[in-house]
Image 1: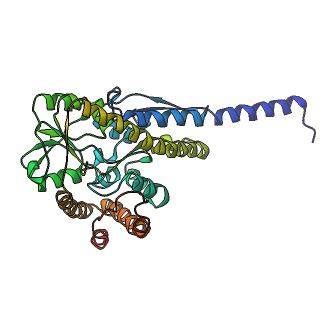
Image 2: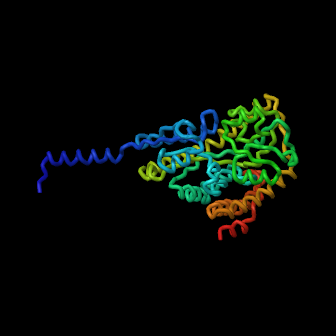
Image 3: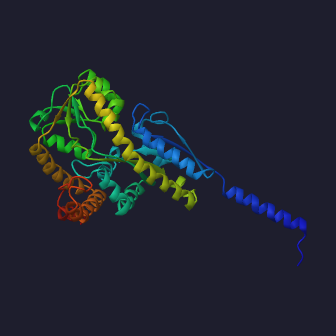
Length: 364
């Protein structure tokens, strides 16, 4: 059968138009839990920058700072409902939805930043993140880590556990509040952008927020006189992007992979960036005349023991939480021998976390 040149040309044109339609650019709206005044937003912006570069004409992410589209506390619901396509977050903010979000975001006295990177990228951490967020119709890409947070910033010194008693301290996190309560303190929940005035007016006795540089961006060096280290309440933290599952599914597998690559690259960048900036922040607090006190080892060991009890308690409160903690402590168990054998040239402290058998019992 002969095909006319006109028919052939029409067929080719249709195929080309079909290809253009298939390659039509997706446009996403993304926001963050962080306003521009809080330096943590730089991690979100870095991922968006890399993602837009890598995906080219396939995807355009339009990023808006925290609070400009929806209040920070409503970012989760906005992504879940599809009101926006994506939202940068710290998982611990959503522990009220399920306790499993708590260990995804941080711990009291357990993982350091490299532990989170190891667990996410080489153990089953990435899948565990997506098991939890997947329950809420989302895909999750972890793309940021910071090492231990600064500690408490106050106007009366905290040098030991006795000094914590009766203090009203801004503290974020489910585990963290339970541990502080058992140490005799009182947890106050408060957004980062509210800390300056609360400290200035004496509404709270003290506060933790993040790493030294982020605390500087919140102005905490201007309204406190004392700094209690180390940041036992958050030995490391993770950050990432919540993506509405329907928005994710509209992307080609190739574009999805490029977003994962951007996330991995941002995670490495975030660690070195925040550690370098932590030095700058540390110097700012010193120049401001803030007195730095470190808790003694006995106090830190008592905190570790209480933290382990709380982790088991939180794990037993939710099947998903049990799954997260068990996976993390199994990683620690597998990594322990090599970590110890390579001392002092290893990847940080050897955390004496909760008993794995107790966590396994929570899963049953």
